Structures are given as C-alpha cells and as structure tokens.
Image (tube, rainbow, N blue to C red; front, side, top):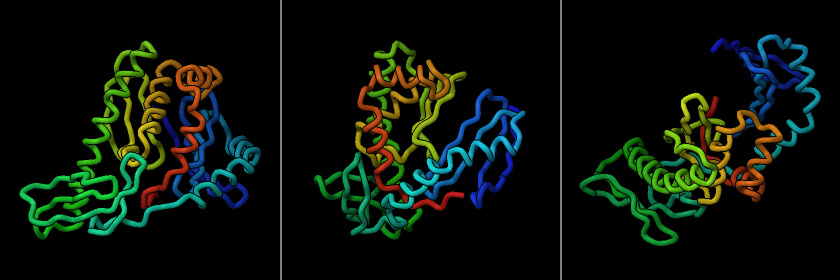
Amino acid sequence: MNTESRQITVAGLRVDVVRKPIKNLHLGVYPPHGRVRVAAPLAVSDEAVRLAVVTRMAWIKRQRAKFDSQPRQSQRSFISGESHYFLGQRYRLSLIDAAPAGRVHVRNNRTLELHVRSGSDRAARERVFLGWYRQELRLHAAPLIEKWAAAMEAPIPVWGIKRMKTKWGTCSIESQRIWLNLELIKKPSRCIEYIVVHELTHFFERHHSEQFVARMDQALPQWRSLRDELNAEPLAHEEWD
C-alpha cells in the first residue's frame, strides 16, 4: 500500500500524519500518553489536517485527560509480592524457585504462583509469565470467536495473539484474520468478548460508520459500557514511542 508518514505541529500539539489511499480522514488519540494520529487520503493537504485537528481539539484534550488520569501498573520484575492482573482481578505473585520447568498456577482468588528454575533472571521469569498469559487468552478467546462467528453468520476467522501498542484488537478484511492484544487477558472476560464482536463486525463494515454502530447495537447492546470499562482498566507499564 502506498503510504506517506510525517509529523506536523498544531497549536503546540505534535500530530502524526499518515497519508494512504483511503476515502475519509480519521483522527485518533492513543494510550498511554495521548499520541494524536491522523490517517488521511493522499490528496488531503496539511492545512486540511490542521483544520480537522483544531475542530476536534476539545475532544482531543478530553481523551488525553482520560489517559493522564488512568491508573498504571509500575514496571514488573516478576518477583514475590508484586500485583498482576488476570481476567480483571488483581493477584499477588508468589515466586517459586527450583521448578523443573516454568509454569504459572492460580493458587486461589488472591495468589498467582510463578514456578521457575533456580537462578532464573527477570527475562526468563517474564517469558514464562507471558507464555501463560498467551495460553490463557487463547483458551478464553477461542470459544468466544466460535460463538460470535456463528451468531453473526460469519466464517470462523484465522486469528492470533500479539502485543500491540495502541489497539486492543485489529483485523484484516482481505485475509479474514483477527489479532487480539495480549494485554486483553488482564481484563474481564466480558471485555474480551466486546473486542471479539467489534473485530468480527468489521468483516461486514470496514469503518466505524452508522451501519457499524447499528450492527454492534444489535449484536451486543451493552457494548458502549464494555468499551468504557475496558478503557478504564489499568494500563501496563510500557515505554511506547
């Protein structure tokens, strides 16, 4: 795809501008620090982009204020005593050394046990923990994707899990593929379900149009409250460019 990327400044605000062969201009504000990005048609001028940003400046400031007030986890070292989130619940981590192989065990509704080999460093502990997160998200998402693909009369898509910086999920209409953000496993199951429905709806409506909203209303009437709940959950500590 032919794309052009650059940055401009609008009223002291840095804006990432990506021009590509699309019909409409799209403006977004992304966590964790409120990065502003505009996707615009190739023929749209910088002045038109500036006008779009200025016109929506009040909304941009509200979105950035939400991110600033949102709780964040500090950087994780994967040691005993740390708190970690799993399916919307906060757990205390207990590090268990001398395990024959790395694994994570949910001991009760308050404690996660991280079993690792003796002398494992932070990178090794993180690898075991994220591997468990990935396995659990796959287990929780698979039946939701099958359920909603059937309910929406859509083919079951190819799907995968990866760490993403600005999106909870994304999809490719052409390849019928869905990607889920690994961070979703930290959120309540109902929020995972909302993202599944959201991405499947894009197979019918590419953009967030009135038709898209109507389909979401029909499939999941409470989707707005789920979206707000998801965005209110604590953000992970990430150094995102």
